Length: 427
Image 1 (tube, one colour):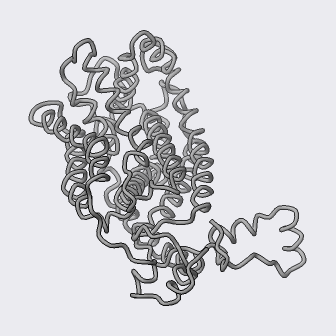
Image 2 (tube, one colour; image 1 turned 180 degrees about the vertical axis):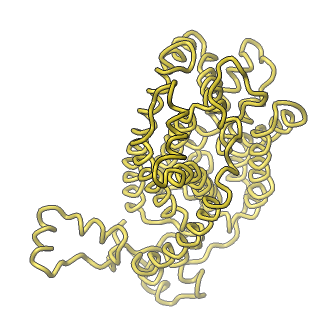
Image 3 (cartoon, helix red, strand yellow; image 1 turned 90 degrees about the vertical axis):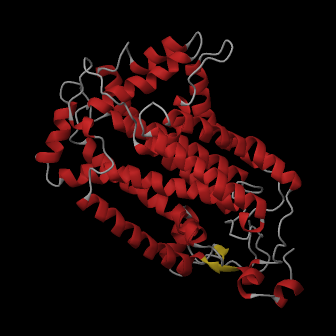
């Protein structure tokens, strides 16, 4: 989106002029995060999580590269190499804990970022491509995190790999060969560990590429905002630098403080104790559970306990687990309400805060609980509402809901009536 009032990059130094002519990288940075990129003036703190996600990704890549220098992707020594990192490598314990807890921090940030998009309608036109690329990033994150969880080669790593890859065997005809192709054999062993390590190292850089596309797609229509009203005049915006750089900066400092508290005082709080036991194919853990950020989808998988006509329960669970994320791809076309922001949709707010959020909370809790009653029944109820929210509630609300009046402009929503916005609307 072109803003006629945006400042153009005009280098003054001869060297910078030469660089701008040959490789306009300074111009790109200026137009992306500098005064050349006007941003809606009413962004709240939920918009800080996008920039924070980039910081988390950078942290994971840096710590992951250093850890890879000391890790051995061989089933006979993988567990010992992790212990070597923890005990013998200088600051190895901190790097390992930083990487493990950094994954959890990354998912916390991304979940908040996604649910901000749900509430404020960030998936609606003209930002559909921004949303679709964001869902692709989330899928890549899940694949990367799963493969990383296997690498320590503890009990939960081994059995988690066996259970998750075993899901592919539910696919008719090609399931068994596909599972063997993924593992490189009939069960997780050295071939699977090597493949997962290679992909775990590669996929973060693929994520970086998709993040670049995500930001590029965002800069075409410009950032959304809490009102859902598009930018109309210069008074609706402020330059990204210095205003939002400063706002993002202190927010990252606060997040880093909370992260360091977790890293130095509770580094194992989110880990499973069984993963500090070397992998043993002959000893099945009493309760196999993935990392916490997979719990809602694991709960949906386990919610299917009976066959439906000729469809096995396992296959339905697999389809529902993947469908829980794939439904996000069609969300821009399921919610046809002309109003973007949930702040001006009273019925939508009720279903969001008292329907979708509690359903996700139940799925998170049940995904980490044993596969027994009442957790299975609660998972079934929560999964039913989860899909109903996207496939039934949103389309129906789009047709029957009467939204609250929208402000004329972003400035009016922030400062009251704006005469300049009324007299000089953007073309």
